[in-house]
Image (cartoon, rainbow, N blue to C red):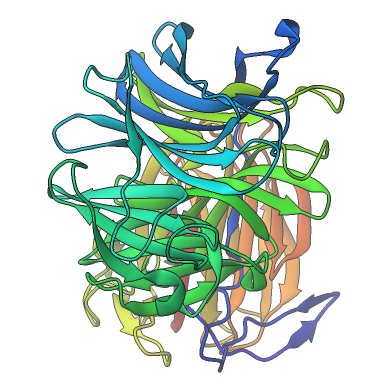
Amino acid sequence: MFKRLTVSCLAAVCLLPLLMSGSAEAAPNPGLPVTVTPEGVQLQTLFDADPTGVDKYLAFPTLLQQSDTKVIISYKRGDAHYMESEASLETMIYNPSTGTVTSRTATDQTAGVINQNPELMRMPNGDVYNFVDQQQGGTKTRLGARMFKSTDGGDTFADQGAFPQVGSYRYGYMFDDYDDGGTVYMLAMSFPELTGGARAVHVLKTTDNGSNWTYVKNLTSTFGFAFNESSLEKYGSGYLVIARGDDHSTRLFKTDASFNLVASKTLSSSYSEINYIGRPKLFVDGGNYYLLCRDIQGTTNYLKLYRINPDTLELESVATLNSNSYSAADSYYAEPYFITKSGKTYIGIVTYQKGSSSDQPNIVRYEALWDELKWRLHERFDGMTTGSAPTGWTTGTSGGTVTVENLPAAGDKALKLQDTSASQLVEATKGFASTSGTVELQLNVQPQQTNQVLGVSLTDAAGTNGFTVAFDNNGKMYTYNGSVKTTLPSYTAGTWYQIKIVARTATQKFDVYINGVLAASNYTYRNPVSALTTLRINTTGAGTGTFLADDIVVY
């Protein structure tokens, strides 16, 4: 959703516009991604190898969740990030319900071989494969991927030998897979030292549970982009692919069912919140798309979770789960799983990291309440019927109409409140998951005049306003500090304004930002409320006028 605006510097605050991009790759939506701040994130060390004194570098974990009581975790156990004399491949079984490691075994300890990067994959028949990137001891030379197979749910793995040559290529590093109705697609990377002689990421597929593989597509060539670590997820009839570029950029691609390129976005040049990622993992929950990965910004490593819009390829939210500056390569290759406890859903994230700058990397697990990392409300209106009432909203139209309307940009729509009565109001409300914690509301509003009132409020279940930010009928915005009406910056007709409110119900305080500029700090709620449940956008019925609202986010 992109709006063309003009700069308007009014009162004491310069209201910066939201700009429309004329480039082939659309500019990011102003205000996105929304920053999500998770609370109560728990950290557990699953394996600290330091006390053993040997083979104490633990890294690159991959996982498969079998049930609420069983997660298979495989990882490298060696002496260094790479190029040590040898490194074993180990497998751990973790029980999320009890929070305990139930077993830890060596899967491969071939002398002179480094088991560098494992990747666990489940076949449609339940067989579990571990494809590991094996390298020659003391070097970074790929020997080719090796396969280990489990038919007992990951308790034991049998060596299946080298991953077979597929067409003209042998492969060294497998990244991700997707089971599409019994056909499993896998991202696999070839290397110059292996048969085929090219550094490229290919799509392979199997229709017989991993017994045989066939070549599908060279994505490096198709995308015109040199990349390595990557992940894929089904979207519609095609796929999304997130890729770490050899040039340290991060790009998101959309393909059709045959993996032909449909659209792409260079995330690292569009957003400051993402830069140079490592071992990305795309996953879907509740129809929403997420990216879990390491993000390196300068000398700092971050473990981040992003929400992605699969239509626009925009980043919609970002949550930082942890960070460190110990070294730029020794942390946060991560994979997720989910578990329900006491009726609540938690996300578990297994990764590796140092405990301090002098520590060696350990296998660790983060756990957070999943609702703390998701939207409570997100509305763009683009998929709704033009001219109709907004789907899923409750509207009051005694004073006019509330409809979805087209905007100038193709496919771009917004909520339109048109008040044609001098005595009756119009309103639109929508509920979200109740919260008594910190809430962030963000939306874009365009007033069509300066002599009508429109309020934006969050209320409790009884309809009591916790706080309101409004456009007044005198060309100024306002809010309430407790019961005191307080003037905010001026506004002009026909201009889009981004409103952001950060509310803390525990202290009954809130902040207001207008186009990213702090306009009200630590104001007191207008009315005391114990929880916020509903967004309300409304006129007052004391005049006539029109307002547009779009890109609404409540976290």
